[in-house]
Image 1 (tube, rainbow, N blue to C red):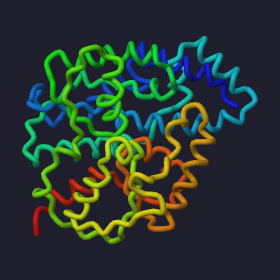
Image 2 (image 1 turned 90 degrees about the vertical axis):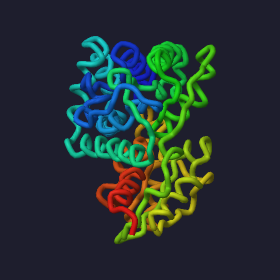
Image 3 (image 1 turned 120 degrees about the horizontal axis):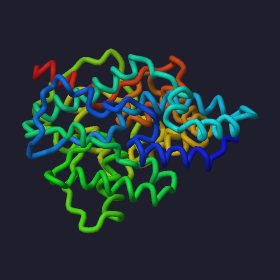
Length: 320
């Protein structure tokens, strides 16, 4: 069993000291946008919360922690990591993520920007102020650390801007449901990119296979966007399939416990993947953490496409 308290301590301290729960390059939040020349101001400000960008690093860490979970010396190794310095030691523990995973995350974010711009959204980008939301701290019960980090993020977001656009379910729920509980006089207007898309820009695509939808728990049960997502897919002419558990009745990917109980997380993911594979080998996801857990256990048995990628493909092809 992993020494949970040590892992929690490392996650909290990494976030408070370096801005991310796992080690990543300093420019990981905004390097994907360097050549897009997005303005630094706009009616709506894009806030990614860094979750797509961190997904390749989280995926590497999750797989490595599962290996350590059965290791008798796991506690000793993490204790040594604590003594050596969390960021440096975790970097060596994780290793560099595959280039294709980093490129995938960048491609999804670029697709979201394209979709918003085509929808006529006056979009700006935060660049250095595009900080990690801290949602993992909250999910793991690290309320004190979360409150400190959230205060820093809110200060950056609210200094000049009021309308914020999120791109993933965890960051969206963090800003709409959780931050207001921790921040006095919270005043941000928060929109998810899915809410802002103009259906009229979406053209028809011809998918070789009908993908099966894996609903994010937070998008479906908390934000209630599952209906809107299906409207957009129908507009694109996508003949999607529904697994046994879908919409508000969706099944968790196991993501919430991946950092402290990776074997349990991956066991849950395997059960969910089996449901999805009963319908199709093409899986449509809309959350970076869902992708991480499901792709780890898939072992090449499924291919994954993000909702934003599919919709951007439909927009790029134009109306018939």
